[in-house]
Length: 337
Image (cartoon, rainbow, N blue to C red; front, side, top):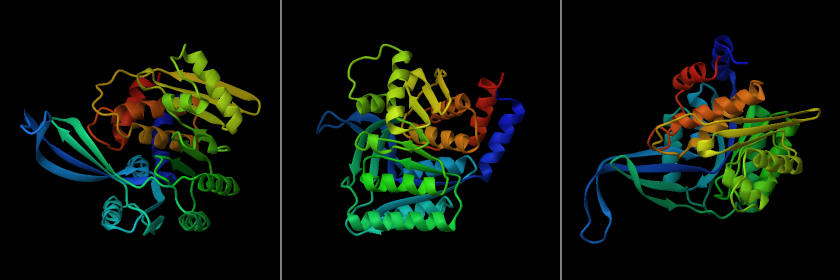
């Protein structure tokens, strides 16, 4: 049970953790402006740009969330050998995040998502990316860098953040989980469809509802929470995952813990929010869940705190990391009885 004292201790202990994030990184590039007319050339709004900004996205947004919560974050990924990669490195440095886990490849481009925001509403997104899988050389370079980091630095958790952009191949996933087990480091996963079943042996697995249904080959409507727990149990058994957590949008989150002689199934309803933008909410959820897991929190508390964090960032426009103080206050207000 969460108390005022245990919550304060938990949030203070976030500062003691170090997390390695491995996956697809990108730049989120924004054009902000106002709309007051329709183009005479086509039936589309004209956005009068007032501000441009570039932010860390994808797995790098997970690193921002980890850092925002007080822990240290290290990114391990492959980017292009291009000007966008230079911008990406500068963004990392500006946020006091290390760049020693980055591999540059002359065969790839650095993923950039361009979003046009008019009157605080996203009007358009343009993606510039290479989604082919890493080749053998790139995979070896990435895994060699990972192994070096694990040998020279201490980590309390590893997050695998998959956006289907080619970094997390079957080979890379399997080797990361093997190395993590060797170093006794828990692995948490935010998956996508392509390699959904390849994360066997991870500690915590966090798909959303659509991803879980696709992973099982399910279609049609869901009869209720009991059916979702049954589906989670099937995947959990196949993949040998201890914690299986599913985000359900407006219906909250469910978590199923399956250990040697113990099973828990908990559904956490969503809290009423003024939703502005769901972009990046999954990054926040996996970040908070990982830190809570690394600090040995109870199953229900891991899900409940992560659920609150995901809701908080949805109140902001664009991809933003969670605010630690706001989350602390929300946990005290809504979860401490």
